[in-house]
Length: 336
Image (tube, rainbow, N blue to C red; front, side, top):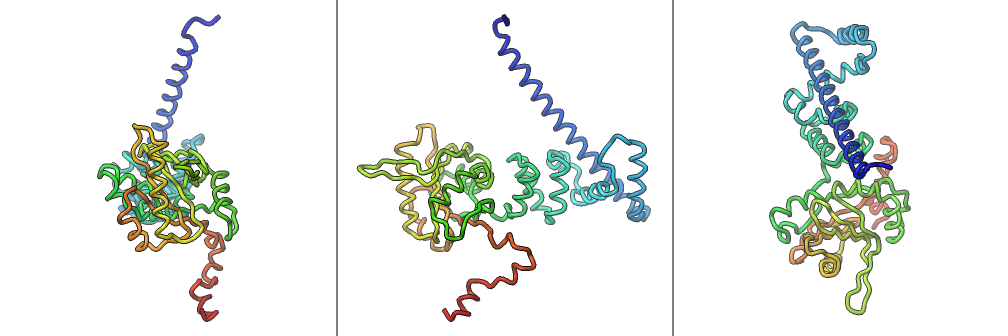
């Protein structure tokens, strides 16, 4: 027989060990990335002072490998990455306070695929905030997440308190990219919903940190009629429901009125007293931003409108993408 309270004690000790292991791993990573920065910085300084060429880096790599045979990461190629890393981050304090929180593989990915420093720093901060793996970070870079974040057309400044409107705005993107969906161009709305639910983990990654999936085709009874929400989420940071509506066509003003109605119903029937007012997210195949602004101008509920895409054309080889005619060119050829 185990003594009373033993199970609770064991669980507490396990949790403390896991926490210590995580902290130790972070500390080791921080020291390693900082070390790599110092090595890269030293190489830059000596090349500048002594005029050393590229071959010296290979010589350093060989000598270090002989001195530390059991230590990885000292290849000539990695030393060149260290040099590029130190060149990209000339301020050592930024490395220690921010960049060293990322694994070395993440940093190499950002060095090779993101050229502008301000964009690179955006991805560093987003990775730390969202806990992106290298594969997820790679996907976010490939889909230009830094250009899309906070770009949805919304009425948040008018319908939400100032302390919430900025956070809500930055929560939404435009466009949303669901390139992982294997769907036909003429897919029906219900089929799109089903495809999104089947890939809900990837959908949540694309939506961003804080989104939790509640359900699909969530029923709402208003009066004598039943209504169904395409997708319902709860946002943990905003502390509110997010009603997602999918449209297979371009945005139309009546979509805003329908969403306004849904939000009123959700706030009345689902919202807990501790929850904040619900937010609507209209995902359309296309949208005219001026039409959206006009449609949302006098709507009482907070609504954002964004496009959804599958990037079918973007999956073609680069040399073939430019060979495809645009819609305008096709219409011109047909005389329309």
